[in-house]
Image (cartoon, rainbow, N blue to C red; front, side, top):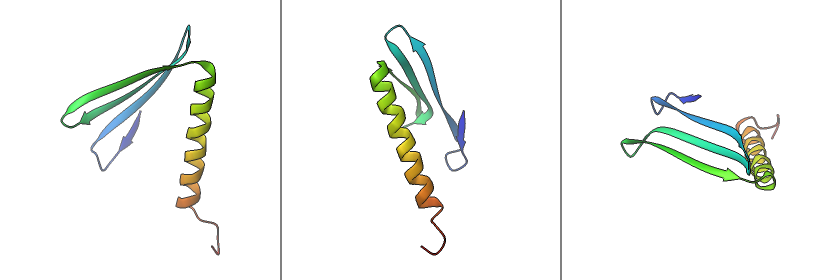
Length: 71
């Protein structure tokens, strides 16, 4: 579970294997006043593409957060 001090709550992301691939569940404790859970099922190639996209986004965010010295 990840928590954000600004929002006062936490969110969770869970992945589980299913016969057709991977089921991802994103749970938000408060979205417009109500808890929400979004679930998607991805086949193996979609799950790999999604993981690559998340890694790329995380790398980009890290570069923006921690710029190179002298840049």
